[in-house]
Length: 253
Image (cartoon, rainbow, N blue to C red):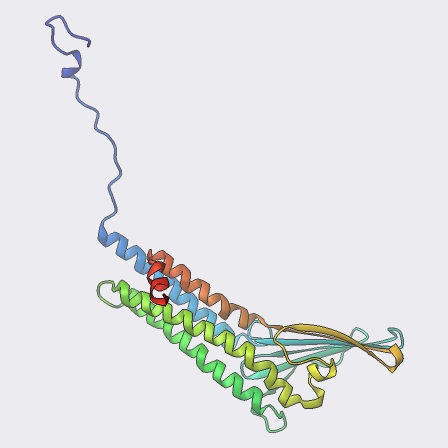
């Protein structure tokens, strides 16, 4: 120990340097931060649902069918695509690279569409999307306008949104291929390609002794994909609340 001339501790007269420690966040700050984050997630859900309903030919397409027919060893090539939005089918095509006509829009409710089954599935899908959107608005209300923060109620709402989103995408995936197959009959893409209705697939067949080749592919569209990703947004929102997912697993057990 270092001492001064009087035998005292030399460091005794030196003021202690205070230790700099960051102050912990106050509970009120944590709640405000959590509510702000949940508002953004609620807004994201509403925007995603709006795009799936109003996104038109591209972003609003729930299902897409593309085909190509070549004959005479490629001397004639016809290509086309049909994008199925929530209330309208958009079709386009080309012959040898030249556009046949502008994108044609056909409403499922038109008398000459013969789209009863398609319209039925799309109508139910639309209702499920509205439920998703209503849940997103409810999340915004709980996070922004409700006094206090009811984490239990908010978590239940997010879990319900996950369930509704999954029901939406699963119902559509199981129902829509059969619907367009029933409506189109012998001219459906599945019958033409000699395949059973499925949500995703591609095929190629030859006719006229190999002189004509038909290729087709059918896939989910952007609208279906973003509704599926809606479940991820809800899971991330739960994680932002530090939700204990073991509760959910325990309830299943």
